[in-house]
Length: 166
Image (cartoon, rainbow, N blue to C red; front, side, top):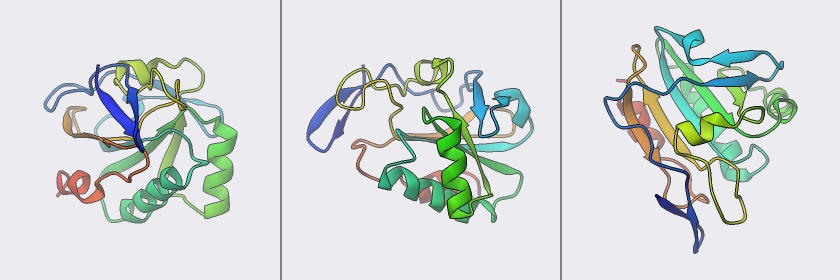
């Protein structure tokens, strides 16, 4: 099982990230308006999956702001910000911040996403939440970039993810 840290505390995640070149696992998540969204809804688009523990933490909020700012420059690309936060919290944050270039999705209902993508934390103070990961998919739903941030308190490498879409 992969290990990450929260500062110096070791945390085990559920499994491995999808491999480069692999078809992304199917997912069904909940939008901010409580409607369902699944991988097929974004068919034919390039996707940046910005996965994080909670919108109510500084680094997670920063990643959403960062991807929102950069999303307007990307052709045929959607940024999906995914956590286990309740959809109400994700909507409140987006509305308060004026963020309309990203799609916030929640894994609170079924919890399959965290296991299927290997990002659920199995122990530590954030057990049950999703680790900080960026996965980029091409138009065919294949993984072209995957980064699990080694320490949850750090931001992801935005440029590495975005370079795969140039």
